[in-house]
Length: 384
Ligand SMILES: Nc1ncnc2c1ncn2[C@@H]1O[C@H](COP(=O)(O)OP(=O)(O)OP(=O)(O)O)[C@@H](O)[C@H]1O
Ligand SMILES: [Mg+2]
Image 1 (cartoon, rainbow, N blue to C red):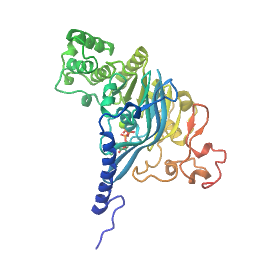
Image 2: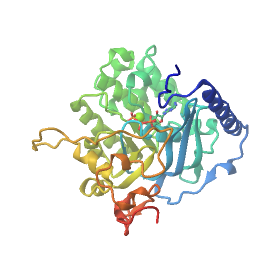
Image 3: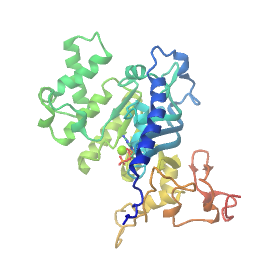
Image 4: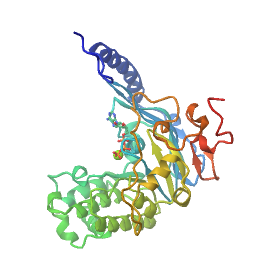
């Protein structure tokens, strides 16, 4: 007797068809990426606002997997102003890391590809579109223009090299003619800058000899070694306990001010965002559902998802029987609905929510939300 095929499973034939189709698409994209001597004019662009250091504009980053196309980032638009911190929040799997990896060109290729949109990076005298830039060109900018602090310091550090050697390698890459003595002095200075007291000792140590908090400091020192203009911090404190977390956050804020750079701060901890961010971007299932200044998002959250996130945060001094949690789960990324992605979990739906995915609505010049509740004719049903 034939067993009923469980939902979500693909037949071998179907899977082969998808792989073949994927290969065709990714080969085409890779061919374009691997061209030699791409003229600068192809990726030269202009910032829409010269006060921004990065502008994500309608970014689409997809993964072409054997079970289908995962639209990890599906039309993301936001900017990171110079000298400011932008917090990116959202549930696990909503595309926060993929957004930042797109900016660093660190996507897992050939499956992971930017298929549409621009990422404009401000270099001062000109701007480049990272989505079209050749890999080698961005490599020259990594470290001194954009730099990333990873979540897990033990995977970011090489276990078989001494801390000093690893830091010097970063310095050497961007300062080819720096003398050995100068490099050591700068490394010691960097270790001191991130609050490591025994800098001479740590210089000679291996990563496993350090505590988690110290390792994270080393990773921060490494990311800031060449005074980058944009720092991406992807959950930099998630692996640390709260006291060390507070110290690391303080450190990051002070260092950012010292070198006047911008931070794109990724986390799912709203408390951390409240402490660090000037602007907040809330992502859900690969799209931005709400963005605004930190005050706007915290004092006046508009999207039901943001309201749910705020309600599920413990508040000091407020006693509750159990903490609120948003019902339901994120839709399957391979098969997104053609209406609002949050609708099936939403407890505040209005008549129009049956319509297509809602366009962005401005609540204030800086506060924007994608939700039918803020449409003038919210109660009207359907697509009208
Ligand atoms: N290499 C990959 N191949 C296929 N799918 C991927 C790959 N990397 C990420 N994805 C998918 O992209 C989506 C977004 O992932 P991403 O890592 O950006 O989530 P996130 O918001 O950073 O989550 P977290 O808070 O857990 O770090 C997820 O559905 C994930 O499964
Ligand atoms: Mg992530």
